[in-house]
Image (cartoon, rainbow, N blue to C red):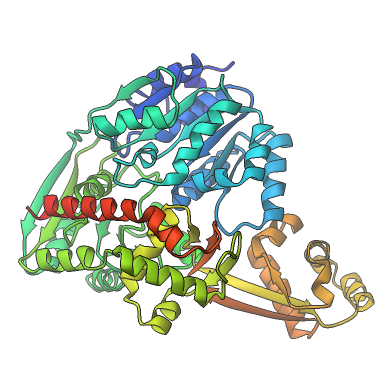
Length: 533
């Protein structure tokens, strides 16, 4: 078995570990259940990635954060490490292919959400995988006393029955003593070794300024510190406005928020990561899993929702250990605006029930039906139809997602349908004359045999993978076929995809989870008050 240091140097080009990483890795290699309480930027992922690479088999990583899973899988793949993630919006056929790859393709990491473990057939497939380690990220989600309780996390302990000799690693950056004990119990950890790092970031200078002209102060800070910076703003409109204003002042700036398409997010992120843009202006959709250690300054232009978020976001500065700055700018009107933004948009039980019933009606789901039904979703259209406030509705949907009643994939996406308009012999003739298009067309025909008879939903990433081409190359062929009137091809943009994990039961569904809603709202009020006072 290779040494941990060798793995770190080979794949990450580092010759030394951060504090507690080596001790956590050694505990896992000794077969011990392990609990790691590390601050944001403490290098939690290394703690399970290195020991898994040292052993035969695959590491199962449970995480609630889709963006984080995608980031980590992309980072592993860049290092030529085989990793996949079962995120939302993946068709059953593709999940089967991915799990086959895990079983027979020498993959090292399988990332999935806790909700995936509620699917019995997926659990059956996982039981047969050569698991060498089970890592539970954001482990505080298993605790009803945590600030982000997700009932689906309670299912994780079942994995202990199937893998009694495999070590569990629980990871979190935030847990009170009560939550720590809850995590140990609910995950079924056996005499876990606890590693807890100080949350003090001595290299970060925390500063708070009361200012009326925030843009002027931001300009002064960025001129003084020209290294990479993050500016957090409250909403998407402010995101674009601040980025545009900074560009007009001569700064290289880009922006990032949840409403951008995947391509726009990747493009803007790469501009900042490669330092072609000094500044990235972002909402709190940005930051999870960002592997950039030389951020000099993190600026908040509005009061945060809670101290935990503020600590995590400001902690993205100075991960290289060098002097860095966290700056909070506020003025007299901020407290009122913050209270209105965060407290007035918390859904109560009555609103949650009304919204859930309308959501089911919107998709024409009858009472007792809807299990495993998936739909494309546009939030603004839904809210407009029923005259719901957008933010309150979004928070209600997030709560249903958190409770596992629905799975909401918030990726900006395209819904594509296509149908061949000519007979199969004509398609064969076209392929013989256009051999460069043949692999893509064959992949479509093999995957969707009914594509001659009807308009067929089309998974772009699946066809790209099966034909071993990029998504851009597949789209180019589709456009060409459409132009030649060989296919009818339509794409429609959506905010999200919603998958119903339970049958519709109205009162029964909402009554079951309403106590968690009340507890969550109370906790959020307390957290906001701790910021304001």
